[in-house]
Amino acid sequence: MAIKTALTSLLNIEYPILLAPMAGVAGGALASAVTRAGGLGIIGGGYGDKDWLAQQLLAAGNAPVGVGFITWSLRNNPALLDLALAHRPKAMFLSFGDIDDFAPPIKRAGIVLIAQVQTLAQARKAAGDGADVIVAQGTEAGGHGGGRATLPLVPAVVDALKGEVPVVAAGGIADGRGLAAALMLGAAGVVCGSVFYASRESLTHANNKRAAVAASGDDTIRSSAIDVARGIDWPAQWNIRTLRNPFIARWHGDLDALRRTAAAEKPRYLQAAAEGDTEVAAVIVGEAADLITADLGAAEIVARMAAEAEARLGSAARMLG
Image (cartoon, rainbow, N blue to C red; front, top):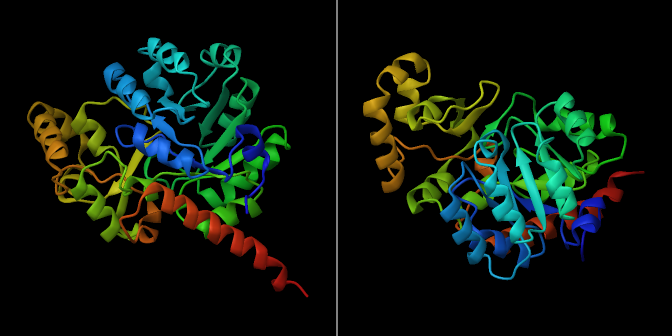
């Protein structure tokens, strides 16, 4: 049985489940697997590695997938949008910045434009700039995000947009219960990252996957320490949720000192990330970490989530009367 919403109709997908375009993690194989399972896989274009993006677009094969970009970073290398559009993705997913400059070419190409936001003001702006779908991302999410929680943010965005644009929930959703709850909040679907971060097709290091499966949401922290360590100048309004580790614990409260030692700490951090040293390099998952309980393939994750959501939605009527 399929779950029918405005999102499934717009994207012609079986289940209203979107893969978060996690930079360096959501590659072509993972995106393809999510799409073939009935959702929509989205390749994470990240910070602008043209060769990596081209390779992952090829790795997706003939599966219709989307492509996502960090919007403020895309402004530094807008040619990446042309590369993505040339592959005729099913959707473009833009996060962390105004979409106004990029909406016209995406719309001219006839491609669905998905904009992720963290506030009501951003939602209204993105809808006015031409977004076909608005993703309301709560602070529970792994990776970068804002300060509002998913549960109150999603219905607030739904009400603010008055049904003119489908709203998708993101942040802390990793199973069918979360999908069913999001639909009851008025969302047309969900974006999931953490549960796919640990999937077999994910490009993250095997050590990171094991750490994600073993972790709890209690172990996460929002910080800017790893961005400073990597030398990535993220706008101050967005920091990143990861698992807490000794490196982050050391520098979280003293970012100025970390900046002063960046020449030594950056290569150390990058080497740790390449080697899967989770004592230094971050495991980028969110508060849904408690729900990541096994090493699964993406198709099984989608199937489980959809089946559980269908069961929850089907049993809801029994609570009445």
